Image (cartoon, rainbow, N blue to C red; front, side):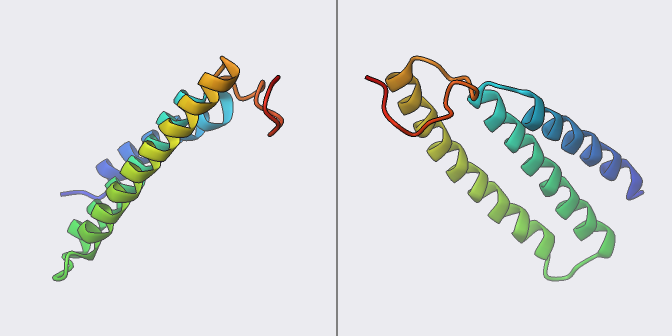
Length: 103
């Protein structure tokens, strides 16, 4: 297997995630963009693990850790977004510039 194909797909995923992270103003879309970034990192880890023929499969073990971190990030992130939406009735990043509670 050539290493170039997964790297191109991973670079594309990372670019889409980075664009979504920088350009979007909705918190849910920002969380989805972070998930795309983590998926690109996971794809790189597995691709290099296969390419280097690692006996310990450390790339795949690190990928499982990234998946666990991503699951925790989604759980906490969505809980925070839902709480902010309940308090302020918006999920726009531009409207959430202060930490004080609305009256």
